[in-house]
Every structure is written in structure tokens, then in C-alpha cells.
Length: 266
Image (cartoon, rainbow, N blue to C red; front, top):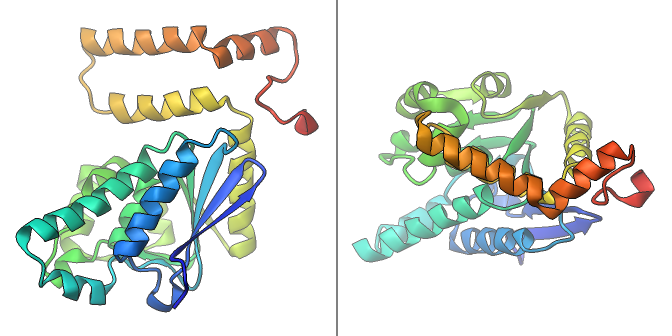
């Protein structure tokens, strides 16, 4: 067993978080959930970090909950079980609400909670041999804590089918329903896509990216009424007056690169 279930590597403005429990297909246990939560809260507060890559070691991306861990939970009280489930929900929220864009680098299967972890990320690329499954009903369970993220990623109709049938999806099908954005033929192509996204994200304003993430999360599915119009008008007004907003417009008019782009890349 590895000493730490989650590894962090920083290279320039990119932080890579790696699930490191290959011997159990990177399945969740309490320590892994706690470590992921702490890491994403920490990275969200680091000004030097511009984007986060979520990766995994071994043949599987994440197999969901560790079944030995689930056996232990069966002996918990109702209150303990609720608290444990809440820790998973909070971890997924920390991923989804991280102010830095999060890229899922899916090199292998993502089942159950692993499916939800991919859904919680902003961008996802999977190798073409990866498989995906909402497998909970086969075990007498429901994908409750991951469902808000699953619904945002693939919509209610696809979620209805794959939650109830627990069908195994190919990477191509996962792309067709919106769970992943790109499919790569091999590990080299997987890394190349991650690098392209990281480069694109570093060309964008950090303030604007964080604001755009909040916008996408908070405006989706709201009715197009006066309250939404006022909300979105307020958001763009704030962006225009922000430090990055003023810098971005000034840089465009002066035909120069804005100051959030690395001088060596200008």
C-alpha cells in the first residue's frame, strides 16, 4: 500500500493531483476522500496555480468506493453513515468549486464515485480504452452524492438511463453524452490534449476563469426572468471594473499580451 493516497506535483502554474492507490484501482476510502478535499481547498487558494490536472496511477482512474471500506460502513450508526457520505459530497464540491479549472486526465476505468469525480471536473479527456459506469444499483445502492455533478455533466435523460441500467459506457459513448470532452487514442495523445488545455487556460485571466466557473454553476437552469438578467448584468459589470478586466481591455487595445501571461510565452 502506498503511504499517501494522493500525490501533488507542481510544474510552473500547473498542479497535478494524482490518485495513488493502484492496488485497489484508486478506490475511495476515508483517507483518500479527506486528502482530495484538503488538496483542492489548498490549491484553490494558491495564486501561483492556474489550473489543476486530476490524474491517477495504474490501470484504472477510480473504481468508486473501496468495498472493504464499504463493509466497515455497514457497521456504522445512521449518524456516522450520514457524516461519512457528507465527507464525500464535500470533497466533490471542493473539486467542482475549485476557483482553478480542473482537468480530468482519465487513463482508465471510472466507475461509480469515479464517474462522479470525472463529472465534477471542468474538462475531461479519456483514453479510448477507458470505460465508465454508474454501477451503484448493482450493489443495492444509489449514486446519490455524485448525482448533482452527473446531472450537470450529462443531463437528466442520459443520467436516467445509465443510473437505472448500470450499463458500461465506452469512452466514445461517454463523449457523446458529454461526460468527457475528448477521447485520445493513447497515453501520448492523452497528455498532449491535457497540455493544450493547460496552455489555453494559462492564456486566460485567473479572475475571469474563477468568475466564469461561478457563472456556469449558478446560472444554469435558472428561468430567463428579470432576476437572472439583473444577476448576469451585475456579473459583467463587476468583471469590467476588475483588475483583470481593465488589464485585458488595455492589453487588447495596445496590441500586447496581458500581464497574466508568462513573459516568456509572450
